[in-house]
Image 1 (cartoon, rainbow, N blue to C red):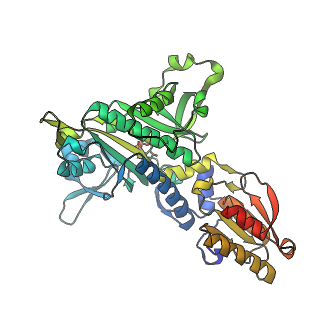
Image 2: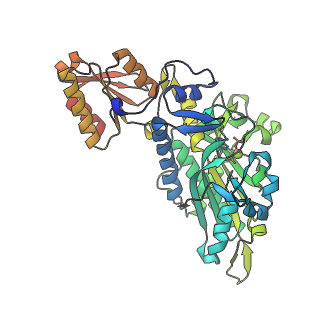
Image 3: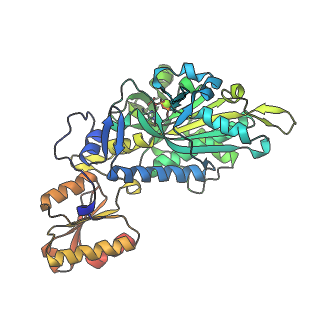
Length: 440
Ligand code: ATP
Ligand code: MG
């Protein structure tokens, strides 16, 4: 992408409305724009990061055996009357009427709709287990939307829903998601701690929130420090192996971790002082087992091996991609801007032409840009005629992992400078060497 043709509205000034660093940096880097309270557009740079986050989530959901579909944002109130949640949900639900005066709503979650899909097609235990997910916008009319897309009214959620014949089966489905979440957050460059959680309006008796530690987090959390060193389930994890998944789950729930709602002061104080962690955290995911809470009132039954009809046992599993992007920034930035983990960076590298219009600089930059792009890399080429200082500041702000800097002196020797955004380390290399390094 040539910067001269890209749309990346960088703000020079610090936006006054931003209270936390991720919100400030997302506005300054031109990633998002507020359209009305708690409702955002994702501008091109932000959209690139969001897509990368969603792709990692999708890959790990698929790996665990979940199947993607797409359900609408607008739902009919009838389904929610069946489950009894239409009245229970309260003011967070945005209620709308269509031209025939039929009550509709903008979905805050999809348990009812997915249960309706399930009951329409699945009739036998032989078709179980089943886990269906989508990545879709939700709307919750939050009392206090704040911190940009961290807590917005319209936001994106990956929500998965599992269906099993028995409670044991449902627990296995729950543990599949548990392991998939550990892998997902790890690939996003985050260390998320699963904490026992309250089930809230979703209902049920088994639930974990996945929390990443950050001073600006809205949750108060208490945990054992051991979590920092636990191993993440490998890429070869067998999600059908009940004992294997149990072992992962047991390990990751073996030490104390709870949010303030579930906090047990006595259990926490039993941990040696030096191993206690009391901090603030951001909830990036939440998983629930809730049994037959929806299948019963909505009649989602399958025929079991005994020939009888059984209400299916269900769970639901959410991750918030539009919250994860700022959460990643909270965890990874410095005074100059964002430091993206490679896995979600909007571009793999940025080529900075320090003297656009200079024949030798232009030729060097064009050849690097062409070779890397051909090799499948996402490259941003700063070909504008801004001052070098402005270009460096922009590159640091938007946090692309590798900066390739081409100035007249180095280029005269067939060389460029390569800067690592994270460490700040600089290295002078030949043009061929830099291309090989990135493509190697
Ligand atoms: P919170 O406690 O932060 O209000 P919640 O418990 O209501 O969230 P869930 O219903 O568990 O949220 O939703 C699953 C995931 O969706 C959350 O873990 C979070 O990542 C994301 N999410 C929920 N509400 C919002 C929001 N208002 N803005 C952005 N992301 C959200
Ligand atoms: Mg929650």
